[in-house]
Length: 155
Image 1 (cartoon, rainbow, N blue to C red):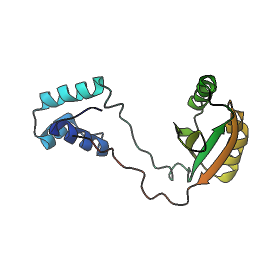
Image 2: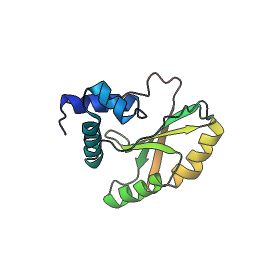
Image 3: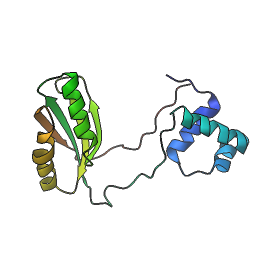
């Protein structure tokens, strides 16, 4: 785990909330010269701490009201099955996130859809065609309580 000084922690906290902030505004808010800010940002990007910049979109405005989590169980847990499964997931645009998890099932997938009919087709046509899938459990979210949590930066 990387350890960050107070300035780097503050930079990362601000960027998680406002990725469009200018370097000069960020430098002012953190209290360092703009040239030092540029150097710090380049270092954080080079070290892979800052992965990318992007816009958070409102799924409701895009008609993607239905948030679904799917637990998936594989028939075998071998490196070959894991690799084939990984390739299938990574080439499926409907998958927002996918995580290997401990417990009774193997993976947790996060997706969004316009309606239940669209999800049912996805489950039958896509997920059940992925290598090794033998069981799924679906959880449709009724209410999102928090989905914008910034990461806590360790000191």
